[in-house]
Image (tube, rainbow, N blue to C red):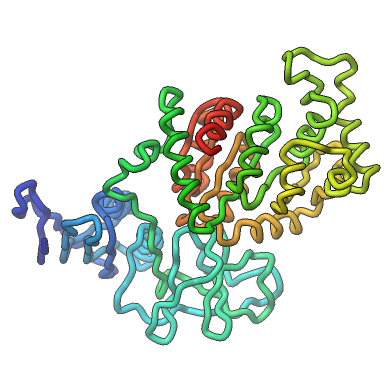
Length: 426
Protein backbone atom coordinates (compact mmCIF):
# COMPACT_ATOMS: atom_id res chain seq x y z
CA UNK A 1 0.00 0.00 0.00
CA UNK A 2 1.44 3.35 -1.00
CA UNK A 3 0.35 6.74 0.23
CA UNK A 4 1.70 9.88 -1.38
CA UNK A 5 1.17 13.37 -0.09
CA UNK A 6 -0.34 14.12 3.30
CA UNK A 7 -2.41 11.47 5.03
CA UNK A 8 -2.55 8.45 7.30
CA UNK A 9 -4.05 5.02 6.77
CA UNK A 10 -7.47 4.02 8.07
CA UNK A 11 -8.38 0.42 8.89
CA UNK A 12 -10.02 0.05 5.48
CA UNK A 13 -6.97 1.38 3.70
CA UNK A 14 -8.32 4.85 2.99
CA UNK A 15 -6.68 8.13 3.97
CA UNK A 16 -7.87 9.75 7.19
CA UNK A 17 -6.77 12.72 9.30
CA UNK A 18 -3.91 14.76 7.97
CA UNK A 19 -0.43 14.31 9.42
CA UNK A 20 0.50 17.74 8.22
CA UNK A 21 1.55 20.27 10.82
CA UNK A 22 1.71 23.98 10.16
CA UNK A 23 5.22 24.47 8.86
CA UNK A 24 7.18 26.74 11.17
CA UNK A 25 9.71 29.21 9.92
CA UNK A 26 13.23 27.91 10.21
CA UNK A 27 15.24 24.90 9.09
CA UNK A 28 13.74 21.91 7.27
CA UNK A 29 15.05 18.45 6.43
CA UNK A 30 13.52 15.53 4.53
CA UNK A 31 14.30 12.11 5.97
CA UNK A 32 13.50 8.49 5.14
CA UNK A 33 13.02 5.31 7.15
CA UNK A 34 12.22 1.74 6.17
CA UNK A 35 11.50 -1.55 7.88
CA UNK A 36 8.70 -2.94 10.07
CA UNK A 37 7.91 0.58 11.23
CA UNK A 38 4.40 -0.13 12.50
CA UNK A 39 5.05 -3.48 14.25
CA UNK A 40 8.11 -2.14 16.05
CA UNK A 41 6.38 1.05 17.17
CA UNK A 42 8.93 3.14 15.29
CA UNK A 43 6.35 5.09 13.32
CA UNK A 44 4.79 6.46 16.48
CA UNK A 45 8.20 6.95 18.10
CA UNK A 46 9.39 9.04 15.14
CA UNK A 47 6.40 11.37 15.30
CA UNK A 48 6.62 11.62 19.09
CA UNK A 49 10.31 12.49 18.87
CA UNK A 50 9.59 15.39 16.52
CA UNK A 51 6.82 16.84 18.69
CA UNK A 52 8.68 16.36 21.97
CA UNK A 53 11.76 17.89 20.38
CA UNK A 54 9.92 21.11 19.57
CA UNK A 55 9.61 20.47 15.85
CA UNK A 56 6.89 19.80 13.33
CA UNK A 57 6.53 17.18 10.62
CA UNK A 58 4.81 16.41 7.37
CA UNK A 59 4.40 12.87 6.01
CA UNK A 60 5.36 13.17 2.36
CA UNK A 61 5.06 9.46 1.61
CA UNK A 62 4.20 6.29 3.50
CA UNK A 63 4.20 2.83 1.94
CA UNK A 64 2.91 0.01 4.16
CA UNK A 65 4.40 -3.48 3.86
CA UNK A 66 1.74 -6.16 3.51
CA UNK A 67 3.66 -9.30 4.56
CA UNK A 68 6.25 -10.33 7.13
CA UNK A 69 8.92 -9.91 4.48
CA UNK A 70 7.75 -6.54 3.16
CA UNK A 71 9.14 -3.37 4.71
CA UNK A 72 7.21 -0.18 5.18
CA UNK A 73 8.80 3.02 3.86
CA UNK A 74 8.41 6.51 5.27
CA UNK A 75 9.40 9.88 3.83
CA UNK A 76 8.98 12.67 6.40
CA UNK A 77 9.78 16.37 6.29
CA UNK A 78 10.87 17.74 9.64
CA UNK A 79 10.95 21.44 10.54
CA UNK A 80 12.42 23.28 13.50
CA UNK A 81 12.68 26.96 14.43
CA UNK A 82 16.49 26.96 14.28
CA UNK A 83 19.22 25.01 12.57
CA UNK A 84 20.53 23.95 16.00
CA UNK A 85 17.16 22.56 17.05
CA UNK A 86 16.84 20.75 13.72
CA UNK A 87 20.27 19.16 14.15
CA UNK A 88 19.24 17.87 17.58
CA UNK A 89 16.01 16.48 16.10
CA UNK A 90 17.88 14.78 13.29
CA UNK A 91 20.12 13.17 15.90
CA UNK A 92 17.11 11.81 17.80
CA UNK A 93 15.50 10.57 14.59
CA UNK A 94 18.75 9.01 13.41
CA UNK A 95 18.66 6.64 16.37
CA UNK A 96 15.17 5.61 15.25
CA UNK A 97 16.39 4.70 11.77
CA UNK A 98 15.71 7.96 9.88
CA UNK A 99 18.29 9.13 7.35
CA UNK A 100 18.68 11.46 4.41
CA UNK A 101 18.71 9.55 1.13
CA UNK A 102 20.53 12.46 -0.50
CA UNK A 103 22.99 12.84 2.34
CA UNK A 104 26.52 13.86 1.43
CA UNK A 105 29.44 11.80 2.64
CA UNK A 106 29.90 11.77 6.40
CA UNK A 107 31.97 14.52 7.95
CA UNK A 108 35.38 13.21 9.01
CA UNK A 109 37.63 15.12 11.37
CA UNK A 110 41.07 14.14 12.68
CA UNK A 111 41.52 13.41 16.38
CA UNK A 112 43.70 16.05 18.01
CA UNK A 113 45.39 13.60 20.40
CA UNK A 114 45.27 10.04 21.66
CA UNK A 115 42.14 9.05 23.58
CA UNK A 116 40.03 11.99 22.44
CA UNK A 117 37.67 12.79 19.57
CA UNK A 118 36.46 16.04 18.04
CA UNK A 119 33.73 17.67 20.19
CA UNK A 120 30.93 16.86 17.71
CA UNK A 121 31.85 13.16 17.27
CA UNK A 122 29.04 10.74 16.44
CA UNK A 123 28.26 8.49 19.42
CA UNK A 124 27.06 5.05 18.37
CA UNK A 125 24.09 2.97 19.46
CA UNK A 126 24.12 -0.83 19.43
CA UNK A 127 22.05 -0.89 16.23
CA UNK A 128 23.61 -1.69 12.86
CA UNK A 129 25.14 1.53 11.51
CA UNK A 130 26.14 2.61 8.01
CA UNK A 131 28.37 5.53 7.08
CA UNK A 132 28.11 7.28 3.72
CA UNK A 133 31.50 7.44 2.03
CA UNK A 134 32.03 8.54 -1.58
CA UNK A 135 28.34 8.11 -2.35
CA UNK A 136 28.09 4.59 -0.87
CA UNK A 137 26.61 3.39 2.42
CA UNK A 138 29.31 1.30 4.16
CA UNK A 139 28.53 -0.77 7.24
CA UNK A 140 30.55 0.02 10.36
CA UNK A 141 32.44 -2.96 11.75
CA UNK A 142 32.50 -3.97 15.42
CA UNK A 143 29.10 -2.49 16.23
CA UNK A 144 28.61 -1.55 19.89
CA UNK A 145 27.08 1.32 21.82
CA UNK A 146 28.82 4.38 23.25
CA UNK A 147 31.76 4.30 20.88
CA UNK A 148 33.04 6.52 18.06
CA UNK A 149 33.38 5.59 14.40
CA UNK A 150 36.83 5.82 12.88
CA UNK A 151 37.35 5.56 9.11
CA UNK A 152 40.57 3.90 8.02
CA UNK A 153 41.36 3.08 4.39
CA UNK A 154 37.74 3.72 3.48
CA UNK A 155 36.31 1.33 6.08
CA UNK A 156 34.39 2.59 9.12
CA UNK A 157 34.68 0.78 12.44
CA UNK A 158 33.41 1.38 15.97
CA UNK A 159 36.17 2.14 18.41
CA UNK A 160 36.28 2.89 22.12
CA UNK A 161 37.18 6.48 22.91
CA UNK A 162 40.38 5.44 24.70
CA UNK A 163 41.48 3.56 21.56
CA UNK A 164 41.35 6.64 19.31
CA UNK A 165 44.79 7.73 18.11
CA UNK A 166 45.94 11.19 17.12
CA UNK A 167 45.12 11.80 13.46
CA UNK A 168 42.39 9.13 13.24
CA UNK A 169 39.51 10.27 11.03
CA UNK A 170 36.43 10.34 13.25
CA UNK A 171 32.83 10.54 11.99
CA UNK A 172 31.25 13.75 13.27
CA UNK A 173 27.64 14.94 13.32
CA UNK A 174 24.65 12.97 12.01
CA UNK A 175 24.88 13.80 8.31
CA UNK A 176 25.93 10.73 6.38
CA UNK A 177 25.12 8.27 9.17
CA UNK A 178 22.34 5.69 8.90
CA UNK A 179 21.12 3.50 11.75
CA UNK A 180 19.07 0.35 11.12
CA UNK A 181 17.16 -0.58 14.31
CA UNK A 182 16.37 -4.20 15.06
CA UNK A 183 12.74 -4.84 14.24
CA UNK A 184 10.38 -7.06 16.21
CA UNK A 185 9.00 -9.85 14.05
CA UNK A 186 5.29 -9.80 13.37
CA UNK A 187 4.90 -13.48 14.14
CA UNK A 188 6.55 -14.22 17.48
CA UNK A 189 4.51 -17.29 18.37
CA UNK A 190 7.46 -19.62 17.73
CA UNK A 191 9.15 -18.32 20.89
CA UNK A 192 6.28 -17.29 23.12
CA UNK A 193 8.45 -15.86 25.90
CA UNK A 194 9.52 -13.19 23.41
CA UNK A 195 6.03 -11.75 23.33
CA UNK A 196 6.89 -9.60 26.34
CA UNK A 197 10.14 -8.06 27.50
CA UNK A 198 9.91 -9.64 30.96
CA UNK A 199 8.28 -13.04 31.47
CA UNK A 200 6.59 -13.60 34.82
CA UNK A 201 7.02 -16.60 37.08
CA UNK A 202 4.02 -18.44 35.69
CA UNK A 203 5.64 -18.51 32.23
CA UNK A 204 8.98 -19.98 33.27
CA UNK A 205 8.47 -23.54 32.01
CA UNK A 206 7.15 -22.25 28.69
CA UNK A 207 10.06 -19.81 28.40
CA UNK A 208 12.57 -22.57 29.17
CA UNK A 209 11.07 -24.82 26.50
CA UNK A 210 11.28 -22.06 23.89
CA UNK A 211 14.81 -21.10 24.90
CA UNK A 212 15.94 -24.73 24.74
CA UNK A 213 14.60 -24.96 21.20
CA UNK A 214 16.50 -21.82 20.27
CA UNK A 215 19.71 -23.17 21.82
CA UNK A 216 19.41 -26.44 19.91
CA UNK A 217 19.01 -24.48 16.67
CA UNK A 218 22.05 -22.30 17.39
CA UNK A 219 24.27 -25.27 18.24
CA UNK A 220 22.87 -27.22 15.27
CA UNK A 221 24.22 -24.63 12.86
CA UNK A 222 27.56 -24.34 14.69
CA UNK A 223 26.58 -21.02 16.22
CA UNK A 224 27.92 -19.58 19.44
CA UNK A 225 26.18 -19.36 22.82
CA UNK A 226 27.90 -17.23 25.45
CA UNK A 227 26.88 -17.49 29.11
CA UNK A 228 27.37 -14.64 31.58
CA UNK A 229 27.10 -16.04 35.11
CA UNK A 230 27.07 -14.60 38.60
CA UNK A 231 27.87 -16.42 41.88
CA UNK A 232 24.14 -16.79 42.58
CA UNK A 233 24.26 -19.63 40.04
CA UNK A 234 26.30 -21.57 42.60
CA UNK A 235 24.48 -20.27 45.69
CA UNK A 236 21.12 -21.51 44.31
CA UNK A 237 22.44 -24.96 43.40
CA UNK A 238 22.58 -24.35 39.66
CA UNK A 239 26.26 -25.12 39.09
CA UNK A 240 25.69 -28.83 38.34
CA UNK A 241 23.08 -27.96 35.72
CA UNK A 242 25.23 -25.26 34.12
CA UNK A 243 28.09 -27.77 34.11
CA UNK A 244 25.80 -30.22 32.28
CA UNK A 245 25.02 -27.59 29.63
CA UNK A 246 28.75 -26.99 29.10
CA UNK A 247 29.36 -30.74 28.90
CA UNK A 248 26.53 -31.05 26.37
CA UNK A 249 28.07 -28.48 24.04
CA UNK A 250 25.55 -25.69 24.69
CA UNK A 251 28.11 -23.14 25.92
CA UNK A 252 30.89 -21.81 23.70
CA UNK A 253 32.25 -19.25 26.18
CA UNK A 254 31.72 -18.36 29.85
CA UNK A 255 32.03 -14.84 31.24
CA UNK A 256 31.86 -13.86 34.88
CA UNK A 257 33.66 -12.37 37.83
CA UNK A 258 36.08 -13.82 40.32
CA UNK A 259 33.23 -14.85 42.66
CA UNK A 260 31.43 -17.31 40.36
CA UNK A 261 34.64 -19.29 39.86
CA UNK A 262 35.61 -19.09 43.54
CA UNK A 263 32.31 -20.45 44.80
CA UNK A 264 32.15 -23.06 42.05
CA UNK A 265 35.55 -24.37 43.16
CA UNK A 266 34.48 -24.08 46.81
CA UNK A 267 31.49 -26.27 45.98
CA UNK A 268 33.68 -28.80 44.18
CA UNK A 269 36.14 -29.02 47.09
CA UNK A 270 33.89 -28.66 50.14
CA UNK A 271 30.28 -28.99 48.97
CA UNK A 272 29.53 -25.46 50.18
CA UNK A 273 28.91 -22.03 48.70
CA UNK A 274 29.69 -19.09 50.97
CA UNK A 275 30.02 -21.68 53.71
CA UNK A 276 26.48 -23.06 53.27
CA UNK A 277 26.17 -26.81 52.65
CA UNK A 278 24.27 -27.05 49.35
CA UNK A 279 22.83 -30.45 50.25
CA UNK A 280 21.28 -29.44 53.58
CA UNK A 281 21.03 -25.66 53.29
CA UNK A 282 22.77 -25.32 56.64
CA UNK A 283 25.95 -23.43 57.41
CA UNK A 284 28.91 -25.79 57.63
CA UNK A 285 31.16 -25.72 60.66
CA UNK A 286 33.91 -23.13 60.04
CA UNK A 287 32.37 -22.76 56.59
CA UNK A 288 33.15 -19.06 56.50
CA UNK A 289 36.74 -19.93 55.55
CA UNK A 290 35.89 -22.35 52.75
CA UNK A 291 35.89 -19.86 49.87
CA UNK A 292 39.26 -18.48 50.98
CA UNK A 293 40.56 -22.03 51.36
CA UNK A 294 39.36 -22.74 47.82
CA UNK A 295 41.24 -19.69 46.52
CA UNK A 296 44.35 -20.75 48.42
CA UNK A 297 44.21 -24.28 47.00
CA UNK A 298 43.85 -23.04 43.42
CA UNK A 299 46.64 -20.51 43.85
CA UNK A 300 48.88 -23.23 45.25
CA UNK A 301 48.10 -25.38 42.21
CA UNK A 302 49.02 -22.51 39.88
CA UNK A 303 45.52 -21.70 38.61
CA UNK A 304 42.19 -23.24 37.71
CA UNK A 305 43.48 -25.26 34.76
CA UNK A 306 46.38 -26.80 36.72
CA UNK A 307 43.98 -27.53 39.58
CA UNK A 308 41.75 -29.47 37.19
CA UNK A 309 44.57 -31.26 35.39
CA UNK A 310 46.15 -32.30 38.70
CA UNK A 311 42.90 -33.85 39.91
CA UNK A 312 42.36 -31.31 42.70
CA UNK A 313 39.13 -29.98 41.16
CA UNK A 314 36.99 -32.85 39.83
CA UNK A 315 33.60 -31.29 39.14
CA UNK A 316 31.70 -28.09 38.56
CA UNK A 317 31.39 -25.32 36.02
CA UNK A 318 35.08 -24.45 35.82
CA UNK A 319 36.02 -28.14 35.63
CA UNK A 320 33.74 -28.63 32.60
CA UNK A 321 35.12 -25.50 30.93
CA UNK A 322 38.66 -26.83 31.25
CA UNK A 323 38.03 -30.43 30.17
CA UNK A 324 35.78 -29.36 27.28
CA UNK A 325 38.08 -26.54 26.07
CA UNK A 326 35.42 -23.90 26.62
CA UNK A 327 37.12 -20.51 27.02
CA UNK A 328 36.28 -18.46 30.10
CA UNK A 329 37.02 -14.89 31.15
CA UNK A 330 36.95 -13.72 34.77
CA UNK A 331 36.83 -9.96 35.30
CA UNK A 332 37.98 -8.74 38.70
CA UNK A 333 36.65 -6.00 41.00
CA UNK A 334 37.66 -4.13 44.14
CA UNK A 335 35.79 -6.52 46.40
CA UNK A 336 37.46 -9.72 45.20
CA UNK A 337 39.13 -12.08 47.65
CA UNK A 338 42.33 -13.60 46.36
CA UNK A 339 41.76 -13.31 43.51
CA UNK A 340 42.15 -16.50 41.49
CA UNK A 341 45.21 -16.45 39.21
CA UNK A 342 43.09 -16.30 36.03
CA UNK A 343 41.06 -13.31 37.22
CA UNK A 344 41.91 -10.22 35.20
CA UNK A 345 42.40 -7.28 37.54
CA UNK A 346 43.35 -4.90 34.73
CA UNK A 347 40.03 -3.30 33.74
CA UNK A 348 41.07 -2.57 30.16
CA UNK A 349 42.36 -6.12 29.69
CA UNK A 350 39.15 -7.58 31.12
CA UNK A 351 36.95 -5.47 28.84
CA UNK A 352 39.01 -6.46 25.82
CA UNK A 353 38.86 -10.15 26.74
CA UNK A 354 35.09 -9.96 27.20
CA UNK A 355 34.68 -8.28 23.82
CA UNK A 356 36.80 -10.90 22.09
CA UNK A 357 34.85 -13.75 23.67
CA UNK A 358 31.59 -12.16 22.47
CA UNK A 359 32.68 -11.94 18.84
CA UNK A 360 30.35 -13.93 16.62
CA UNK A 361 27.89 -14.70 19.44
CA UNK A 362 24.42 -15.70 18.29
CA UNK A 363 22.85 -15.96 21.74
CA UNK A 364 23.95 -14.51 25.07
CA UNK A 365 22.42 -15.95 28.21
CA UNK A 366 22.84 -13.73 31.30
CA UNK A 367 22.39 -15.54 34.60
CA UNK A 368 21.87 -13.51 37.79
CA UNK A 369 24.66 -10.97 37.41
CA UNK A 370 23.52 -7.36 37.07
CA UNK A 371 27.03 -5.90 36.90
CA UNK A 372 28.34 -8.25 34.24
CA UNK A 373 25.03 -8.40 32.36
CA UNK A 374 24.98 -4.63 31.86
CA UNK A 375 28.68 -4.62 30.95
CA UNK A 376 28.13 -7.30 28.32
CA UNK A 377 25.00 -5.59 27.05
CA UNK A 378 27.10 -2.49 26.34
CA UNK A 379 29.40 -4.58 24.15
CA UNK A 380 26.75 -6.31 22.05
CA UNK A 381 25.16 -5.24 18.79
CA UNK A 382 21.37 -5.27 18.98
CA UNK A 383 21.23 -8.13 16.47
CA UNK A 384 22.46 -10.61 19.10
CA UNK A 385 19.64 -12.43 20.87
CA UNK A 386 20.02 -11.67 24.57
CA UNK A 387 18.18 -13.41 27.41
CA UNK A 388 18.53 -12.22 31.00
CA UNK A 389 17.47 -14.48 33.89
CA UNK A 390 17.16 -12.98 37.35
CA UNK A 391 14.84 -13.17 40.34
CA UNK A 392 14.81 -9.38 40.36
CA UNK A 393 12.91 -7.85 37.40
CA UNK A 394 14.76 -4.58 37.99
CA UNK A 395 17.89 -6.18 36.52
CA UNK A 396 16.18 -6.65 33.17
CA UNK A 397 14.70 -3.17 33.41
CA UNK A 398 18.11 -1.64 34.05
CA UNK A 399 19.56 -3.59 31.13
CA UNK A 400 16.92 -2.12 28.84
CA UNK A 401 17.25 1.37 30.32
CA UNK A 402 20.98 1.33 29.57
CA UNK A 403 20.42 0.73 25.88
CA UNK A 404 20.18 -3.06 25.52
CA UNK A 405 16.61 -2.92 24.28
CA UNK A 406 16.88 -6.34 22.65
CA UNK A 407 17.25 -8.06 26.04
CA UNK A 408 14.43 -10.44 26.96
CA UNK A 409 13.82 -11.21 30.61
CA UNK A 410 12.83 -14.34 32.50
CA UNK A 411 12.05 -13.56 36.13
CA UNK A 412 12.74 -16.58 38.29
CA UNK A 413 15.23 -18.25 40.61
CA UNK A 414 18.26 -18.99 38.44
CA UNK A 415 18.85 -22.38 40.10
CA UNK A 416 15.32 -23.49 39.20
CA UNK A 417 15.73 -22.10 35.70
CA UNK A 418 18.98 -24.00 35.06
CA UNK A 419 17.48 -27.22 36.39
CA UNK A 420 14.54 -26.93 33.99
CA UNK A 421 16.80 -25.97 31.10
CA UNK A 422 19.18 -28.88 31.70
CA UNK A 423 16.20 -31.25 31.61
CA UNK A 424 15.15 -29.82 28.25
CA UNK A 425 18.67 -30.18 26.87
CA UNK A 426 19.86 -33.70 27.76
